[in-house]
Length: 81
Image (cartoon, rainbow, N blue to C red):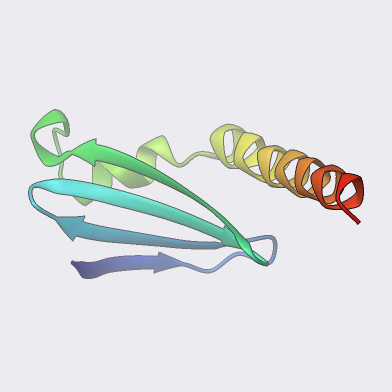
């Protein structure tokens, strides 16, 4: 797996990898991560197509999901304390 790009953002880290004819987009925030895979064959313009997919609307849903993940994990942790 090799790193194709890193997109700096204050609210999360975004890294794009290439592995086995797939683009892997990894979002990280704290101890949580989300990964999305996209076949290189499904893109018209290679990694530039991935950049187009990663618009602000999509990224805002990813950030909201991180908040939900944190809340879910905290609830589960509290149930078992």
